[in-house]
Amino acid sequence: MEVKPGEVEDLIQKADEIRNLTIDELAGVGIGHVGGCLSIVEVLTVLYYRFMKVNPSEPKMPLRDRLVLSKGHAGPTLYATLAHKGFFEKSLLEQLNKPGTILPSHCDMLKTTGIDMTTGSLGQGFSSGVGMAVGSKIKQDGVTIYTIIGDGESQEGQIWEAAMYAGAHELDNIIAFTDYNRMQIDGTVDEVVKLDPLDKKWEAFGWHVVIVEDGHDMEEISQAIVAAKAVAGRPSMIILNTIKGKGLEFAEKAGVGNHNMVITREMVEQEKQRTAAEGV
Image 1: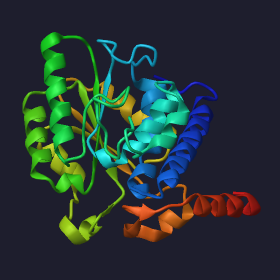
Image 2 (image 1 turned 120 degrees about the horizontal axis):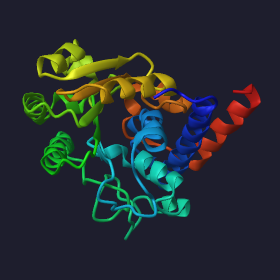
Image 3 (image 1 turned 180 degrees about the horizontal axis):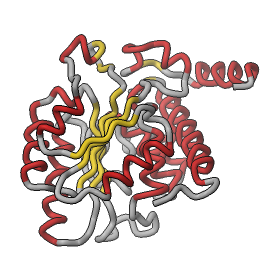
């Protein structure tokens, strides 16, 4: 699948819009998982606008592709993406975490249109994605299961149980992504439990592995997905080297502190004024 002229530029614009929606959504609450939300904007944009078979007007379409956001605390970015795609009105993003909301902090398939799996307890979403892939194989429906896991989440034993199962059963209809921003709630990944060489670990479990050096590069992400879809007889893991808090300077500078941080409308407005003044 070749990148069409102007397609990357269009994806970049959409990602910018989704990032802004996510930031405003979180600022409306005043606190949230800013870092891990902003590090997956590009991959979600590429998936929903280039690869996934979905229909906002028929969100339960039987033969749709599925997305399981196993790192469910990044739900606000998925909500922003779904709203941008037309699954529900963008105005609903203002209801994030509010009483009676359809947009809880972590993804809930029983509350939010377009969410394919309830997630939040780390490791369980990935297992659900593997289960979906098994079901799809049994049905032979041609559906692709996409799932996104965190690097801190990758320290959970359940991730590797599911990885072993998927590799042993040659589930080539699941494509997973690791959001490798190298930070988690208690410190850097290396300080808690070092994962490198992460690619070799996944290969040892029978997975096809692609490393995306810039996990925010639309074309590089797209090429990795194309390569993964061409693989037969093995599930695929795409390791995205990302920046936690990408696109929001005060969040990037906060480092580990951006995992769950205060974010206000005033802070966001000051950031917009700064970038406008600097012509960024």
